[in-house]
Length: 165
Image (cartoon, rainbow, N blue to C red; front, side, top):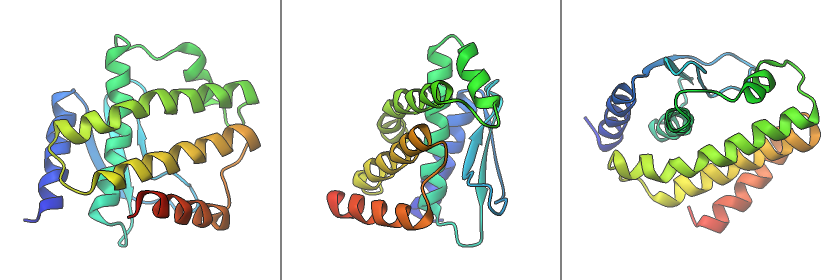
């Protein structure tokens, strides 16, 4: 078993320690969802393809675990306005802002989870991935849609250069 396998296993045990189960399921084409956290705190699902790297799985799991940690720190309560925004198929700008702000707030836990689980991949990958995710949510907030693949590739290249990964 390799280093990434060990990290993934530690993250899964970390999740179990928080009281959440982790499942890996095949990616749903055109869904734009890499992973999801069930708002009652019971389950995290990471969607994978045959081309998903172990590091991508780890980063998706860290992202969702950050939501779980925020949920725990909020007495296992989800803000009613946020829950409404998340359930809305076409959220209004005010609701998209609430989603964006929750992503920004919850992303502060990424580095804690990285350290708590003794991850050893380059921490700059974590920072770059977090910045890219936050950018995507910001674009969703501002434009009511996720950036195009072309825009995403351009931004990812810019972020990779910034973090030298």
